[in-house]
Every structure is written in structure tokens, then in C-alpha cells.
Amino acid sequence: SEVVFNQKVMAAKQEEIAAKQDDMATKQDAMSADLKAILAILSKNRKP
Image 1: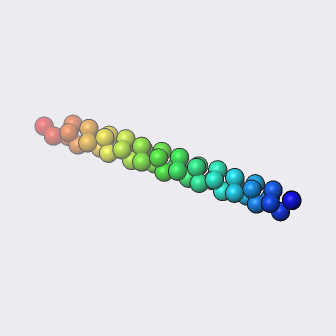
Image 2: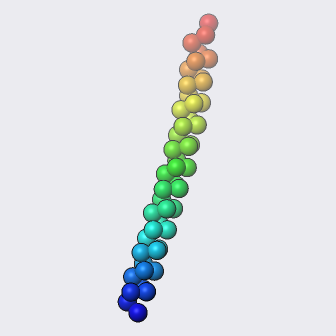
Image 3: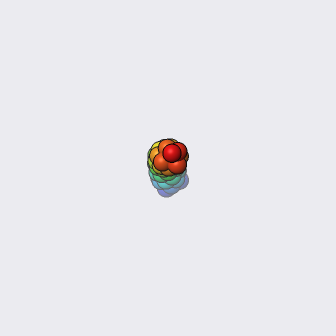
């Protein structure tokens, strides 16, 4: 029926949104790691 179809579409969209959120979290983790690495390099360069 149309109701079941709509529920499946909604479920698929929710899964897509969840996947995008996971991807964003992964990218944020990677950016955080990059920033920490950059800060570590900068702090090493400051020392005489």
C-alpha cells in the first residue's frame, strides 16, 4: 500500500541522514587529528 511505501521511503531517508552524520563525525575526527598534529609541529618549532 501507499502508506507502507511512504514508511520505507522515510526509513531510507533516515538511514541516509544517519550515514551522512557518521561521515561528518569521521571528517571532524580527522580534522581534529590534523589540527593536533599541526599544533604539535608548531610548538616544537617554537623551542630554541
